[in-house]
Image (cartoon, rainbow, N blue to C red):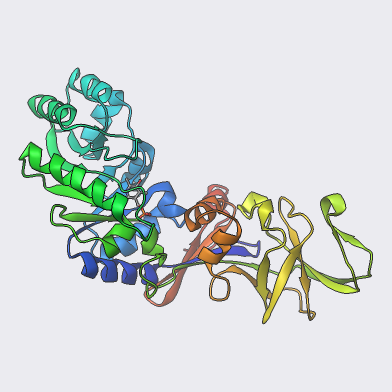
Length: 372
Ligand SMILES: *Cc1c(COP(=O)(O)O)cnc(C)c1O
């Protein structure tokens, strides 16, 4: 990597978050690594969560599951989203578990050879995304899949309001899920409903596994002592003095109202640093520097109180700028900010207390990646 913009992922922090959340729920642990582990690198995060005791990995699609298989992971994988029924044979061949999520899907899967397909029944307890909404359709799907030789491995639902301090909706969803599980009277190996938030605050006596995503990275509205695992950095390319009245950037959206020091940084919207960040601040050498002018594709400008040398590091979020506060300011959620950090941004890893190489798939494809 020659460009000075990187995301740091601390795998030790992730491992510690696995251990502490696993201690809270005391159940089997499914680490949700969809979307390339929320943009952090599925292979690296998989190593960390497995070492810390995760029992299964979950992803969103067959592509994501096969990438983990190709990277050498041969343990349990569950696909939480919809997989085309016609791809059942690939699931079977690679021992990948999948969600059974609609009558049409069950009909299409059982119309072919689906012997030994590992399924987790998705129960829709009100989110209206995927799954069976009532017990009779769920029971039919169960019977049909079982008769066709599928392995009825699990049953799950997904909470849609678990970040709200009022847990009424989560309680109602849980009651529906518990009723569905009880109605089937089957010894499922995997019964799961708790996402990160519910894993931390919700006690239930029906599930035997939790399903943790965002809290792996230290983010939780309920538990503030998790370890923050991700930060985003860049470096100042140059600084300049601008005179009162000069404008900055495309569209001249910012005019200096005094003589000012303006610094340029190599991060822009093509890195996932979206234009809505204009007016927010980054941390540079003890100062909070406002992003002035429009954010360009590859660069942006900030106003400094005191001049700094080229190469000085700037933190976009991390120790000084909280990712969740950044998300609030952008009227979004931390999930979206980290997933949007693009493939152009090199990921640098810390593991076992050391720098553990960097990853940038696009650079490696051209043979440009420096040492692992
Ligand atoms: C994304 C997802 C999770 C993980 O949610 P977090 O809030 O990140 O813990 C769990 N289950 C399902 C079905 C999901 O889609």
